[in-house]
Length: 466
Image 1: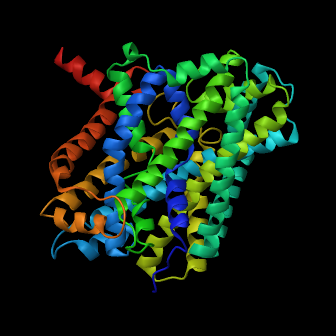
Image 2: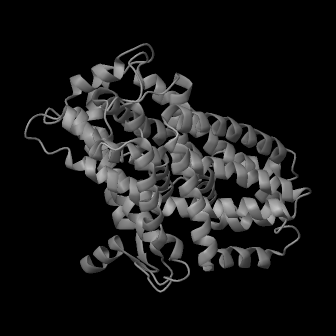
Image 3: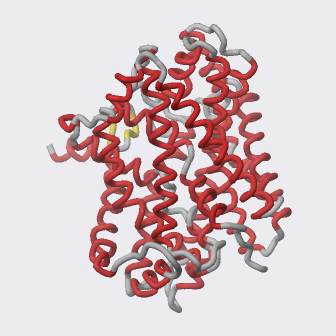
């Protein structure tokens, strides 16, 4: 099967950035910044983004470009005879499916809110009615499954047209529209009465607020925002040539990803301080709190429509990128054509995504952790706390260890072409510090995850030791 290629460098940057840019940037990052003290969290986040996220991204791109294969096959191309690294490739495919099983539902929520604002259903409703609307959406299986299905069908339909004519072309226009909408919304937020107070909270670091929780939260968000560890970047590395070095390309993608996350905060926090919305409102900040903001804003119907349209574009950019990863893996395993694989994978995803879509209504009696937890919480825990850090650790160890691909092979591939290069003096950091940091992320994520309202694994360990 002939390897497909992206049509341009811009397409590669926008497609890779689109994979990184998603709900984690425009939903999770602002509410975490609100919960962890604003500017202090942003400062620590940016530091970890460059010392943790950047090198792992370079490694994923290097593995993809060197192997010219999907995550499920790249190890077979690069590992030594008799080695078992390729088992992680199958785990990466499972993780991609698992991620999309709940991500497609969340993207459906965003689409539902865009349609609701556009139709005027949100205009003039009270704050209590706004909360009730969100709860009613979750409790309605027809709405939940219907909007999830629209997202899945749209995603695989676009993929069926090909890499360049489908994924690359649509993502280019979508990302340009996304950036334009963000700038428009941010400029509008600067004109609000609470803009000065909101921007001060968000951009002026209060170093006294930095504590262990802020550091751990920023470390986790800086790593997980890039979706590293499941081959999402490796697949796009396999679609490009060796004209440009991968350090410079990764840095461009990281800057674009950071721009979107930071700009999301520039939109949200001035609005929060203008309309007396708690910036640390948590996950509900986007759907419930921002609905309140737009209901109190002149022309709120249209500003709300634009806001959730930009959110939908951000989420769909990740959907298309991860669906492409799944498609490439399945095609290499089966030898099927793109259209046939799109049809079969689309049908499989519709079935696999049902538990999450039904987890708030027909299957709401299933509580994997706490009495209020859902299927989404279980799937998110497996991806975010297990597959992502362990997958990234596999990629790092494979790149730097003599029992894997080896550091010399990795740095030669990463530095091939024009642009910024990795330096050999970085080897101790990449070989020893980076794997330990990722392992620490995994351990912290497991031990601090709340399995119940008052139950964490670390809390139980301390109770046993007491």
